[in-house]
Amino acid sequence: MGQILNADKPDQRVKDFRVLLLRGKRITAQTNSSPLGEFRFELADAKNWKLLFEVEGQEVIPISLGTDMTVGGNKPVTASQL
Image (cartoon, rainbow, N blue to C red; front, side):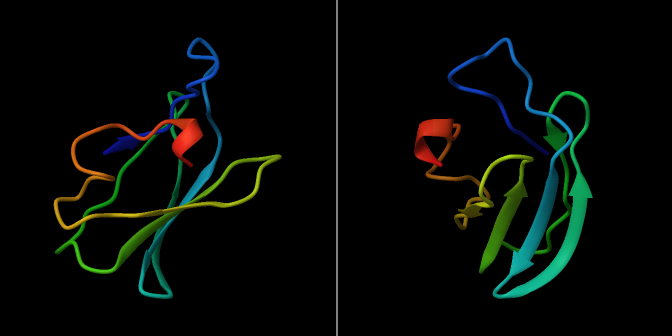
């Protein structure tokens, strides 16, 4: 499970965005966020996975997943890192 939060305005939720799951350059799944900005995918292993976030009014945000299924270790990703 993942969740997008607004680091600049923590009380303002990021919601109603689309998340695409890619393996290499191929889209393998997609989902829409919950009202809390949450999303979920089931993965077999962690090689060559990437998430693309389509948030209205912003450029597409790509995130490569590490082999431990996190971004940059166990630390959450903030908007300034995107």
